[in-house]
Image 1: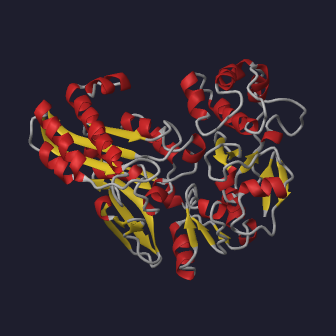
Image 2: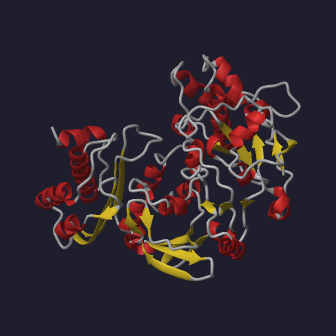
Image 3: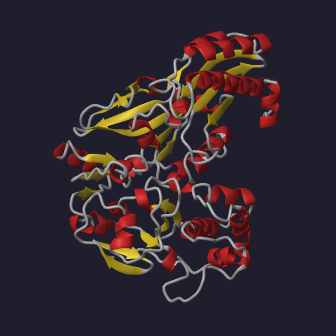
Length: 471
């Protein structure tokens, strides 16, 4: 296997299928500027850029990116950011120096790489800078000088062009182009053939959750089946009545796709991991891992989505997302099956809706409670109502008792009070390190109140207004 790193070809033959990009860069490529911090995609010290011809470079966490998944990418580390012909500095590096954005320096390469990814997009406002570095932790300087550097980097001479990979789509289909035991099919026919031949293969897409088994639990799968390059699973198919989203579509793609369709979803997605996570994490992976605190399932429940499952034998079946989760970390996936796509009714997406996420950290954190509310509204009269929660039970669930209160009712203060009372009683969450059961119930009711008031009155309530409601 030959990997393009900082514009040069680097030999990667002999790496196991569980090899992470971070470990390869530090131990095989001799590039220790990329740091290892948390090993779970939370701190950003391991951030590198990946680029393909004709696409903007994207920041990823190399600690949870498997080496085989970047076979057709050009990898850029902090050592090569200023260009292969150096010496020199990238505008993000120059601005970090000028703004005194570094102290101990351990986190600095990751911040620089995240800012370099932003630089390539051309976004300059402070919100864009803040969002770009939401997945990077600094414990020395604080964020003020780093935010300043993110805004000032455009004052410096243009950055060099990110080197492109020399790989071709034909080359990466060849067995020798990937680590032994690592398979990366390009279409569903190849995927299904591999599944039939290797039913026990380790299946993953972006790997932002699955690779934690390697970095945190020291798993060493001998056979990896990577679906992130399957053409059909990357497709977005808009129809007259439905929107079909391939299972390997990334969150970053969803942000762009839903910008005109659902500002509430885009606002939630900005808090789903970091930019590094969203550049790799996928819709299908979020469903298939069966987590009760996954962020997308409550949204899909509120929108009456269906999930399309495919098998190694070529069979296909659809079922409502409401029937997909069978218990804690248990799904309707049978042997040899994978999530192929999700279908969203356009009419459901167009209904008035709100999506709220509550977590200990505002950004890049796991949900304590996630609430999705979708209503048919005729004035203040509610038609069909959908209310779904994550983090409140062993699976993401719709709140049938709350929907019963709302359906057919006038959305007045009395109805809202009764709906919130029903929400607090509808679930039996657990106490854990993130929150007590009582807190979760109270917050589910509070988030529902905010959603219903916003939908009724046509306003967005800031935190001050929400606090006033409970004063």
